[in-house]
Length: 74
Image 1 (tube, rainbow, N blue to C red):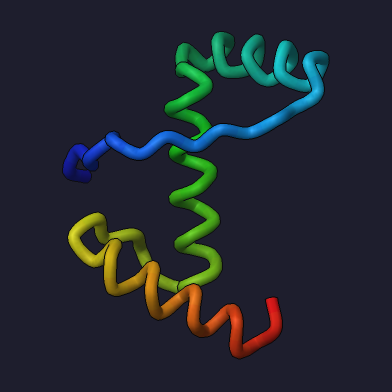
Image 2: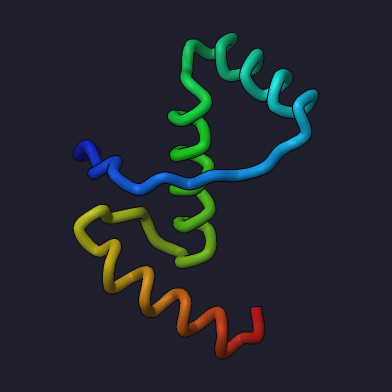
């Protein structure tokens, strides 16, 4: 899989205890929390779109998925 552009920042608020457990579990699999979050997001996109993630399709996919979600009332 090609390396993706990593220029956007996603800021989330999370319970400190949950964050500590998450970081420990990431460390146990020798992954950073950012790597795991990127994988979770990619898996979510693939689940929702029903097809493998293609980084070069990101702009068109984002626009059509957002429009589809709004039509479905999500």
